Image (cartoon, rainbow, N blue to C red; front, side, top):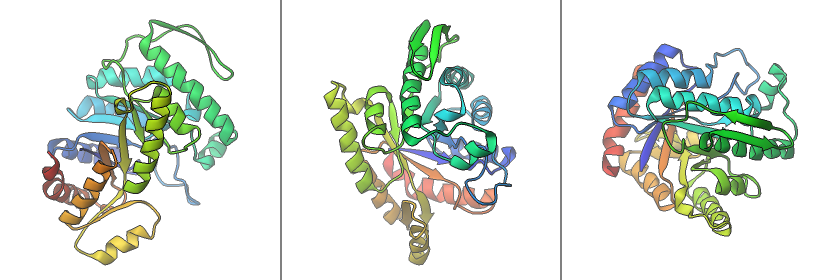
Length: 299
């Protein structure tokens, strides 16, 4: 089992860097960053740092750990431009970048920035073409593509990523379209959910892989949950009321939940920092407790 840390884009760069360096030195395996331009809330005035410039900076300053977007909305950038960005971050980091990609969902930032939101079906159609564009550019010296939404003519991508292939992580749990697309193109797949949800959707993904003759084990599975590492059971129940999957309880209780995820086929569990405390030191204290009481048991 791998463990990822997810600093929020509302953190200052200095706080993000401090948390990232702490995660690296205390044994975490990955650093993940959301790709959004503004909060998904009525009050949109809060800071939201840009994802890919942050990933490039982390790749240059924090060693060892994988770094990735969780996830980039395909609507934000032309996929050929995104592939170029990801390849460059992979070179900057020495081969540690993961390109997390989804169809896009946060409507308010599309309206605010004048980005075409389209319909769900339209976004999914664009997303499937984007996966073909990205994987083609990573694999080929030059790429030609003639789709409804994207067209490439003798398009190069150089330098190539250090990793061959640079992992494409597809985010989302839609059982009719997203999981079929993941079966075709993903190296990794991520979705929010309980162990039961991950087991059920993972089985559907496996089925789609088998239908096209792909080994289901060639796709790594990951998820995230709200970490509530505490002896206070009431605090765990309050977080569960938020509707997000919760990984909560004391050390043994959290380990038991992680074991359930492992049994459901999950390879990496990612912890957002949003509920870990208001200060960097408070977040580091929870990270350390998690590393000592939970991560150490999965080495």
